[in-house]
Image (cartoon, rainbow, N blue to C red; front, side, top):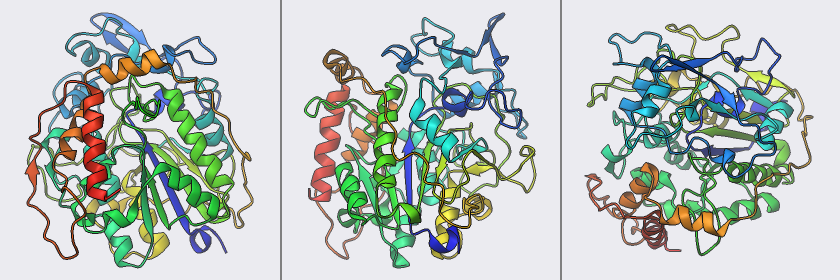
Length: 476
């Protein structure tokens, strides 16, 4: 037998806004076959070379774990400035990856430290994701699906497209593309989205009628894993907001949120899956939606457009920046470097790297879900080939321990009282457009409408708005 015949459970945890080099660039520092950091990479700030650098704290303290602070630029215009240090060329050509520092210092107000976006963590500082990457497999060829903000890339993982929208605030709600969740339902496969506060995937219009049957709080994931009742597909969303009532920090790793709370979430998910009766039939993928302005040295190659949607002048004919991706399964040989192209992806050509639509490609192949959703997932490599062990013999560590600090009440209040970041603001606006309760069977969807609700003045108010609307819509 093998992975394709035996795997029954796919679990995806998608975190926020970190590049591959930022989190895993030093995973294998002496292995020339690993496309990580040499330490010689740099960007210019004015005439000053700014090299990549690690903080000296091991384990990380609260300050170092929040670098970069403040949040780098993450709009479509920011990302192209980071890649090209100037206008995006037409036709697209290989970017020099030279504008990260300049774009960071162009933010308003300008940061005080020009080095922050060139920072990386060592494996000792992020031990959970590093240990799992070495025990199973790391993909150093996984790109965000587009050089765009969070929502476009999260829609790529769910639908294979973002219908031409480049930034969070530009989306009409509900989102109209067909999703892999609906395809799973139509093919008789089970799925659930497990969330902490505000599931961004709830924007998908084609699942609004059935959403109350499939959305569960994260605690249910832990019990489902323990009971051996995980669905065929589990998608896990992190905590995007600080929660004063639960005394919980954001665990999405969105700068400047503390990465150690994301490490804690990764450990919780892995430990639950590893101890589950489902373990021997599972594939667990950890990835991030986009790089969030953090430096990476690998130029994103040209890509197959998902469709003809390009209303903002971008044809989605290139990938975004590399993001971390760790592939965990008892069918994965330990220490694997997961790649679709062994010697490096050609900038243009028929050989493509992994991207978020590889998850769709994997699900379609594994569960016989039929034709591609878009032109992008039609060419995306799936993850079944790298799961090359004939039998599920790689059990990896029995559990992993995180080094997240106890919640700092003052820091939690500071985050709650801060202005909401772009993701938090858009989630609050989106929540205002959810139906006030579960839709009755056969009810028509409301027409898509642009985000129009006022942005709350603090993250705490944005959180309260979002959670209230989500619970009302889901009937919980």
